[in-house]
Length: 229
Ligand SMILES: Nc1ncnc2c1ncn2[C@@H]1O[C@H](COP(=O)(O)OP(=O)(O)O)[C@@H](O)[C@H]1O
Ligand SMILES: [Mg+2]
Image 1 (cartoon, rainbow, N blue to C red):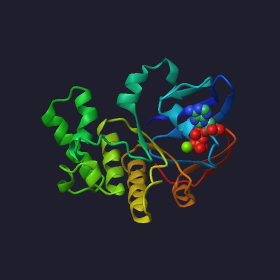
Image 2 (cartoon, rainbow, N blue to C red):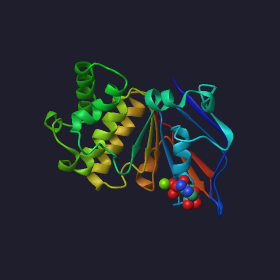
Image 3 (cartoon, rainbow, N blue to C red):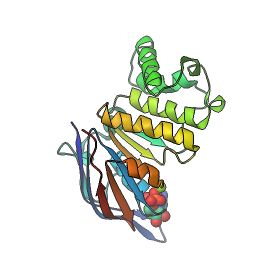
């Protein structure tokens, strides 16, 4: 059971000409087994918050804790490799690797022997509902929905139970969107993942156990819908 706590977190983008305050004293928390949505208008700070949760950058002020441990004091490489995983709107699969190789990649990075990595990757690809014939296909031969499911399988294979997704269905049609949301929901409710999704889509937000709505770098509304473990 993991718990993340965001405490008084502020973040600014500083350039020579201006400082943009992207997050202003944000407080929120996240638990395993639940599906979270972060919503709000474009520019409200959603992606910035997600990138801090995923350990891609550190707050300028305030703290993020995982199970009571300050994220800024943890080994960030280990956090990003073994604990947290990120899924993007644009899938970000490796174009020169086939589906199976894409999912095996994080495992091989960790030094897992090839045969074990392949077995685990195949299992994850099955868990996102893709058929075996996808294994040998390259990203450009797959639909958007297939690519996003491979990206989720890759995130699962890495082994972390914290899954952060930034507009994961932004490039998908309605049917594939439904597929991907159902997978993310299942990962939270049945596999015990902490799933945090940034989304513009009110239909997805309505299915979240907790919705954090942002405006101007702050969380202006928290909506709990129950569900989860
Ligand atoms: N790399 C960056 N450099 C400068 N400003 C940025 C950068 N990324 C985001 N911003 C600014 O920070 C604010 C929050 O952005 P972001 O977190 O991407 O919002 P959202 O994901 O809700 O659209 C916006 O004003 C945006 O223009
Ligand atoms: Mg964004």
